[in-house]
Length: 111
Image (cartoon, rainbow, N blue to C red):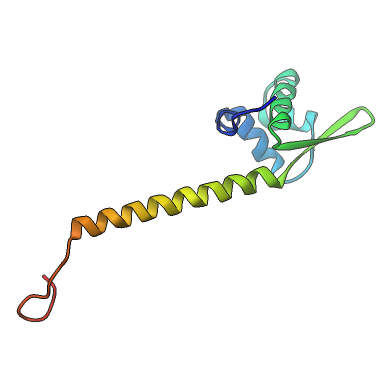
């Protein structure tokens, strides 16, 4: 099932789960304590994060350990870098238009 990355990240509970996982691998029970919602809710959000490719799960006997995947965050950072660059260029073009061509005044300095 394909997920819109921004829709996945828009949910505050999922963002709290990602923040909790930023420091390393965690069990579902640990995540339940950290985000303060019931286990079925945490499991549902973790499933969505896993389907979207943000987390991996490692079964270990009766426990399931979740951790972040680096790749989707790198892809987001790369995409955002392009957006930031494009916007910086647009703002620079606007500044150039607003400032217009300045000619030195009689003293040789720009007004």
